[in-house]
Length: 259
Image 1 (spheres, one colour):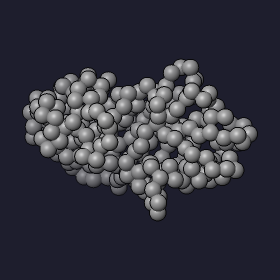
Image 2 (tube, helix red, strand yellow):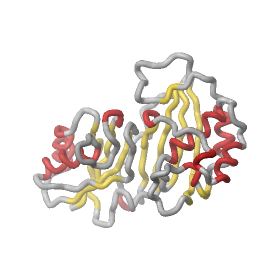
Image 3 (cartoon, one colour):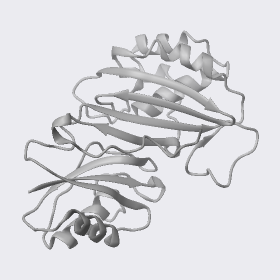
Image 4 (cartoon, rainbow, N blue to C red):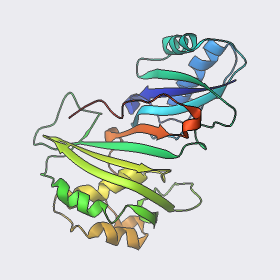
C-alpha cells in the first residue's frame, strides 16, 4: 500500500529536507516518525528537496507499507511522534503509479519580504527584512522577461545537479500588502536555488539599483556571476504541489492569509 502525506514545516531549525548523518533534517525526523507508527522502516520520498532554513506549507511525501491503519490513525500517530516544527495535514491512500516527485505537474513557491525601516521580532526567520523602499511594479515588469522557457544557468547554484538548465517558469506574481511583499513563482520544476536567485535579481530592480531590463541581461548572460545575491532562505516557502486529478489529493490553502 502506498500512502501520500501533506507535510508542513518551519525550516529554521532543520539542515534542509534530505537526511544526513548527524544532522537534524525534515526527512530524518519524518522517516523516524512514520517508521514508528508503521512498525517497520519506511522510506519517505518528497516532491522536492528544500534547503536549510526553507519552509513548507504543503510538501507532498509518499511511503510504502503493509501495515494497516485508518487515515485518522496514521495522521494522529505520526503527528504524535513528530517535533513541534513538523506537522502532517492530510493522509491519502494512492495507487502505485503515484510518486511524490515524479508525478508532480507543478510546484509553487512564495517568497516573503518585510519592507520597512525597522526589523520585526515576530517575522524573524519567516521573512527577508530589507529597509530600502521597493517598487513592486518594477519587479513585476522585470519578471516578464523571466517567465517562459529559458536557459536559467545564471539562476542556478554552482552545486546544482540538474542535467539541463532549461526550465519553464509558468508565472511570477509580485504583490504587496502594507509592509509585506510576496513573490509567487510556479513551474513544473526548479533548479537548485533558482527561486532565491530570482528574488536576488528582482529586489535590486525594485529598489531602483538596477534597470528593469537587467533581468533580461542576466538571463541572456547564462552566467551566475552576472546575477545578484542568493536571497536568504528564511523568506522562502514551498506552498503547493499539483498532481493529476486521478489521484484526488486533498486541496490545501495556498498560504496563511497575510492579506
